[in-house]
Image 1 (cartoon, one colour):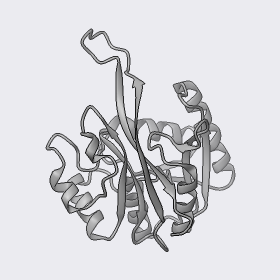
Image 2 (cartoon, helix red, strand yellow):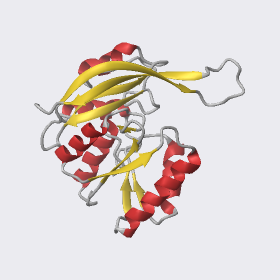
Image 3 (cartoon, helix red, strand yellow):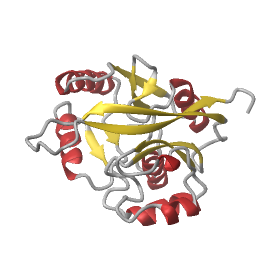
Image 4 (cartoon, one colour):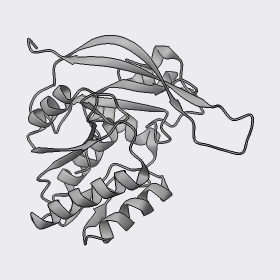
Length: 233
């Protein structure tokens, strides 16, 4: 299971377990080795490890540099895939919903090492997915938001009915276009909730992709809600 630590991965895992066709034996997560945090989500590795323990599936971490080139990323992922294939893994699960180019990229990479990709929530209506996510008892918090698309106040919010109601019309309910990222801390696949404390909101900027458009922004900003493992929880 390609585990991002967020709600889409949680929904895909839940769907795969309900289908009862695949034996989900390992969670795989890429981590920024410089900060020991989940890539893009900014979640500290201690919470990732606590999350996997609460779910009860072994976790395998892929260490990545802070800003890997596509060549380094592909090489690192290919090496990990070959390692997993040698251990007997033949299937890989993803939480992607409708990004066709991303699915094609994943399938191409996996095919090169003889692994089959599965997308349990592919093409599902994202508003219905999120509504069912809430109804099923999953709990998640926004840990990263795109500052160009959502105000600062959304970072650190819980995923609930009011969140769905307040979400602007131009934002995908599941954040499938990168509008936001989440940390899922409880739900039907969890043996117990992951206890955490909210820390500071941190603003970070990243270089924008190069383009010929002179009016295009030179950088993008993101808000991060820092979470800390609550060892007393």
